[in-house]
Length: 602
Image (cartoon, rainbow, N blue to C red):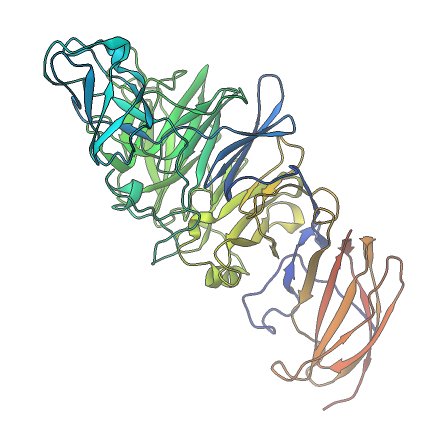
């Protein structure tokens, strides 16, 4: 008799082989499309060279001239691809806000002493001061600007006021809004998470989540990007807010008056303009970093952050419930804000006193890392710190998403590296994807799991072995973009090779029991492959009992167009594996037919 291989879409890998009978159980780089498995598309290099550092965030957008820009945030640099060239636009920094009246002068001298706790600077470096007020006869214009410093001690340095200006009196002054930006590139950030417990990193009380004197950082450097019109907003996690204004010859610049420590930056489009949000930032009045504080700029003015300024629409909110903000996403006209514990929904209410309100809409469903959430249409998908998959749609509730291959992901997620997880969408195939660091491979992102969202494939999961530290869907780029740990940037779903090289794929069934009272001999396969490119191998593993010894028979690799494959395998339970690895490689698997004959009872 001839038996077709006819299985529903999706991998079912968390159960025993017999519990998963009648399903696909394992695979790599094979998705489900219209109910059938097919090999994923290939990838081709976008940039000849490599990025500097490990990229965690990639952001494409188009400027007013319809030219594609792509920003890459690594642990070392902020880089930009434009017009087939790669530019270094790494900002100067970090940004520091000094205490009240931090400047001191001596009468008749142009030397100004600066109180800057834990400045970390060296003699001869330059800093840019802003916000200093005229005092002791020294003009503000001669205090502010770029100044070369001489270090006195770890908390103090001096500079000479501009234009040979001298003080008419001794004493402290300068005001309470002086900002200092070091005039050298941001220091290199951590490549890996360094926390020793849990799957997330970065606890409140250490590094940027604690006092400015803390030096340890417990999470890998990630970036948040957004578009302010045609300009780029960039925020290295725990650092300041920067804006790049579409000049490849210029670096991104610190945004004046913005909070100096920000967990995540987000732009909210408004009628007639934008508001820039700082999620998890310094409170306005005290300047103290509050991991649950949200501030936004005035509409259409990302340098206006004072709530007391005349006509200002900037405001401040503090979320309840404890913990820390991890990230945010726009979902239609609303804003989702995740803490490490809960989910909040931001709604624009238009009140002058409180333009936005934030309501907690989910408990114990927080976000594991800043890049681990993606919005598709009106639905968000993310991973929580307990390694559970969630979704939320406007008007609904945060809901766990069943994943029949979750055990492998949860058991092997590299400890303390959860902040590296990257969620992305693939509109062409209506799916969401989560790239993650698998401890079996090391500390870097090396594998992915993906969920089909629409049609007869809805709810079907697949997975793969592929090292991508950053990933983003197509639009405005023509293809999805992925970056590997070595800084190579690729267009995905393009071609059928791994940038000209072979890539492996396979899909495998669970054990199928044809008849518990009889044994069978399988001796032939009629393939049913569409769009095959490159050889395809089929293996058959047979057992007489569920945990008995296995015998595997593999047919010779089949070239496109071959009508049958011969092999002999006998048993009660059979497992089929279909695989390929060539350059190029492609295959859509229909309903292969197996020739099976009874072999008696035993």
